Image 1 (spheres, rainbow, N blue to C red):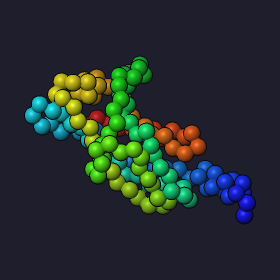
Image 2 (image 1 turned 120 degrees about the vertical axis):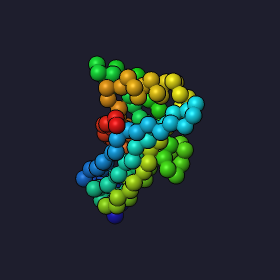
Image 3 (image 1 turned 90 degrees about the horizontal axis):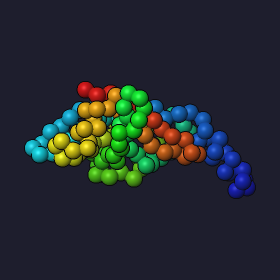
Image 4 (image 1 turned 60 degrees about the horizontal axis):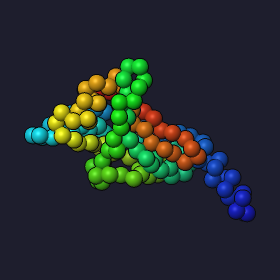
Length: 135
């Protein structure tokens, strides 16, 4: 198979299926002068190839859709994930967590947000976006 044909087959396989995600509620975890938030993400890749999510952020929006701010979450295995690899047809659970000073931007964004969204980039210029509900 030529390299051009290989690329076309890979693009076709990446385009089929979708990435599913079920998120738990955004929960506050306080510890003294710092405040943290976390949620569990259960990913399932329905595509026929491994897919990576990168530039993973939690974005906070007002009722009018204005962006309050964003933060890169840590996970249960890494304090600053650059990407999450999702093998084909395999479930993967990740604990997404962020932390900041009590009364700081993170706490204000969470309290004032009408909508919180998990956002990440995907191959082919796709954007993964899933709403997180507050507890």
